[in-house]
Length: 185
Ligand SMILES: [Zn+2]
Ligand SMILES: [Zn+2]
Image 1 (cartoon, helix red, strand yellow):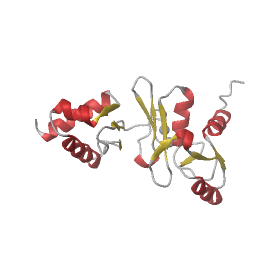
Image 2 (image 1 turned 180 degrees about the vertical axis):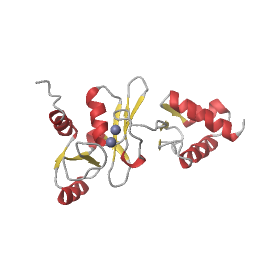
Image 3 (image 1 turned 180 degrees about the horizontal axis):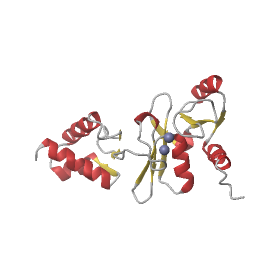
Image 4 (image 1 turned 120 degrees about the vertical axis):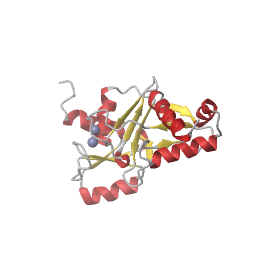
């Protein structure tokens, strides 16, 4: 099979099943894992994949966001600000920013995994480990203003510059509920 054809089929597969392992793909296409990793990197470079998680780990799950638009507001995605919510049925919600990610998560909190992007490095981390800067002067994407960070010292630095308050996941969700008048009263 030609490389281009295989890459196109990999994309289709990743679109349908949000989690497949590099080993699965290698087996399916009868090529080595090295070849699969090369394909994934090439797709990434072409901008056809947004990001790959665990792609370099041989046994790891290849999770790739192939969607281009935010599940909450339909805005076009920018890799650096994305959030991902992996559902129990294997489907993947992607969001353009932390605000939309929290919004999407609060609509349907049953999720296998909720990942937010670290504002500084762009790396993804579990939302329950993140520090959120809420309601600061920064307006990264959608309102209300939320930034997410991996490190407590970095969120403090941003707070010194942009104001706002530091929150963990529960408090950030609560702030969103109040801000959107979704508190059920
Ligand atoms: Zn959005
Ligand atoms: Zn947004």
